[in-house]
Structures are given as structure tokens and as C-alpha cells.
Length: 450
Image (cartoon, rainbow, N blue to C red; front, side):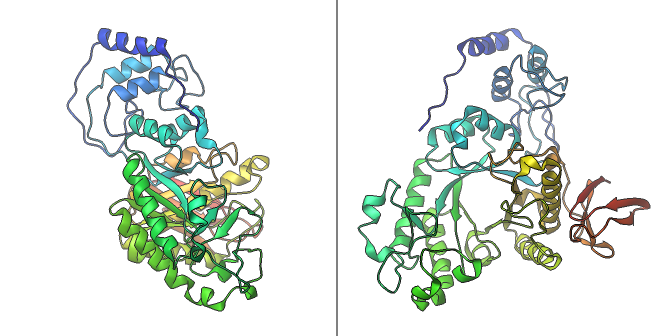
């Protein structure tokens, strides 16, 4: 496990000298839905953590307002930015969700091992899904940004001979799924992995492991439970043996097994969060977890920039499914993406904003919606575009068809969100909205200030 780099002693000394010398003005707390520039870590108050973050970036530069530490938005981080913060020291009272959809970073494959990556996540995201073994790093991140919601990754039905607990798990043969010849079943292309039986002692073991992990690591708010599948055959999970070589009872009962599996986990972890990666299967959210994650929403990270992926009908269906959960007060979360995004940055960003708009159409409370794009190291965007910081405000009404054939829109307190559901290459569409004319290409979105 990588250790967090030691703090710069010179900067630390500078911070304390600065605090002793600067005039501090305690202002009357404000009440606002906007996060002011001097709340650098967006935690709802202006305090020492904002000064520390800015001091650690001293003498860096970029485009004006390139990161929140550039509080005066002149492109240079210097003493003036810290003075600006100190003049608002002690103020609080604004909302830290800004009445916008929350930004989720999925940081796997060693992304959390880099201090630069962790700082980027702190500066740009509200929610983090990362491996469970970065306990020291996540603890430090939570101290800097207490509002950061952190989920620890744990696959619901996969065990690997590479895992630390393999010697214990492998002793329980009845925990594994077997083919008709009694052999353990494995996912294709993952030679160390095995499919576990959610209707066995595996479920109790998994639930207790989640409970113990969260109790020991309070910086994690919950568990991201992967591969929460209701129908293995429908989702097309490739295995090393044909489906015909697996007892039919496995497929017949799998859905009910998984529902009970999620119930066991949620009961064990209590008030902690459980976010199942369940695609269109919303039963877990509606009955147990009250959080739903839809991977591959509208455009999967494995689909090319010129691939429509979802049909128009499937787009409407996905929005409807998520909207139903949002109406129940549940959290809805999505992940979208684009293969070879660095080679097609314009098209990739177009897809990101289109998928973001589709999630916006599904929301009821924007603070209960998480949007994620790609995985952290998949492309140069690192999962973030400035438009994801748009303060939409809460929705005013449901989304509706603005114009034929497939122009849809929704009014929020601060913006109109408009998207063209048409298939790629079907031609641009011109339409009127509030007396103004707009033109949209297929699979693009507009964010129009009210």
C-alpha cells in the first residue's frame, strides 16, 4: 500500500506564520445555495482546511479559475488567494451540494495510489468509489473534505485466488457455483476468479466482511457492491463453460437469491450506504438499498464514439426506470463512457453531456443523483468536465417532448436542459424554446440559462 507523501515543512510553517499575521474578520454566517469561492473544499464552511489546500498549491498557475484554490480567478495561486480566504474565515451556512447533480469518481486500477490523483478527486468530485485497501489515503481525503462520500468496492459474487482471504474462502466448497460435473465456475478471461453462490454461507460471510470493514474504517460511508445481477443469461456474463453446463436451478433461482443477498448485507451494515451495480434491475434499490447504480447508462464505456448504443426507446426506458426510483426518494447513480476517448475528445465530451442530460431528466432531487463519466484513468478528462458543475437547481417539472421527432427538455430552477435523442447521422433539428430558436445534432444536449 502506498503511503501518503510527507507534508512540505516549509509550507506548513508558512501557514502558521500567515495565520498569526493576517487580520481575520469573522463575518455573519450566510445562507445560500451557492458555494462561495473561499470555501475551497466545498464542505459548507470557511476554515483552516481551505487555507491548507491553497497553501499547498502556492506558486502554481493555470487558466483563470482552473482549480478552486485560485480563489481570485487570476490564474495564479499566491498570497492574495489566502488573504481572500482569511477575510471570510469562520463563515458558513451555504449548501455544499449547490443544487446540482453530484459528481462521482470511480477510481480503480491504482488511480488512488497517486497523490496528484487524490487531490484532483478532492477538487472536482463529491462522491468516490475506490478499492477498500486505500484506508490511509481515504482517511486523509476525508479530513480535508468531510463532505466527500466514499464507497469501498467489493464484488458481490466474485472471489479470487489473489485475494487475502482466499485460504479461508476456498475451504468452503459449498460457497462456490459448480457446473454439472462439479467443477467451480469461472468468468471468462479472469483465470483467478470464481463465481460465488449468493444462496450459501458466502452471503453471510460477505455481509460480515462489509460490516467489519465499515466499522473499522469510518471514513468510508458505504459499500459499492458490483455484479448485482438478477438474470445472468440476460446480461450475457461470459463464463468458461456454456450455460447448458450449469444446473438450471441456478438460473431459475438467481434473482431471488440476489435479493436475499442484498437484504443480508444491508441488515449487517445498518445505516451505512449500499450501492449495488444492478443495471436495469431496480428491485434491490426499491426494496432494500435505496440506492441504484446503472453502469453503461445511455453509452457504455466500451462503445465507440460513433456507436449509438441505446436505442431511442431504451433511452426513454432507462430514464423512466431511474425516475421511478427517484420519485421514491432513492439515490440514482449512473456511469457512462466512450472507448478511445482521447482519440475522439470532441465526440467523447458530446456523449458525456448527453448522458448527463439524460440523468437530469430522471432526477427528482438533484442532490440524490450521482453522475460518473469513464473511470478515473481511462482518458484525459479523468471523469470530469466543467459542465458537470452547472448549478441546475431543482427540477420544476418532468421532462417532455419539445419538438418532433425526438427533442426532449426539462426546466430546472436555473436552466433548461434539452437533448436530441435521434440516432447519429439522422440530421440536425431546429426548434423553438421560450421564443428563441436552437439547433441540435443527434445525441447532443444544451444547457440554457433561464
